[in-house]
Length: 210
Image 1: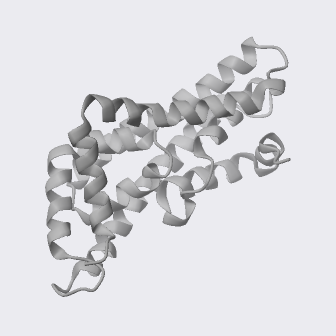
Image 2 (image 1 turned 90 degrees about the vertical axis):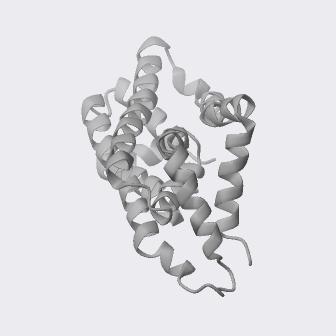
């Protein structure tokens, strides 16, 4: 059975930081367990394996730099996919749609995406492709990164300190964490379905055959 606790203990501060960076900033990191990783690290901090303040600080920096890296990837290389009007796989009109979407909804998209697995990895890249202004992007990046890291590590630390032998319940707790991580997107979709549909269509159209 996959033992997340043992993996995190073996990885240490450097490994945890690297995973958080990759999940937030590298397209190949979309499959990494960012939410459950932070929660379990917080739980282990309550057991004395880590300093919770060091964890929050390091993971916050990794998450913020990671998302900024994703933005840079989209801005520097993503737009080259749309360089030719007759591109086989990418259409310039879709790039214009992405620019318009992030001009209107960019800030809240970055915040919501931070709490949704997979979308968290790809949203900054699309923001870079769509040329969302970096100043506002960075502000939302910092705000959402601190909230995401502090919330999950803090929750793990608090439960670890309050509930005896919480390790026994780790798997169902992680299942709840995964559900809660997609809940903001579900709520937002129910409250504003046209906006969620617009975001989905924008992202899908960028990577759809012409």
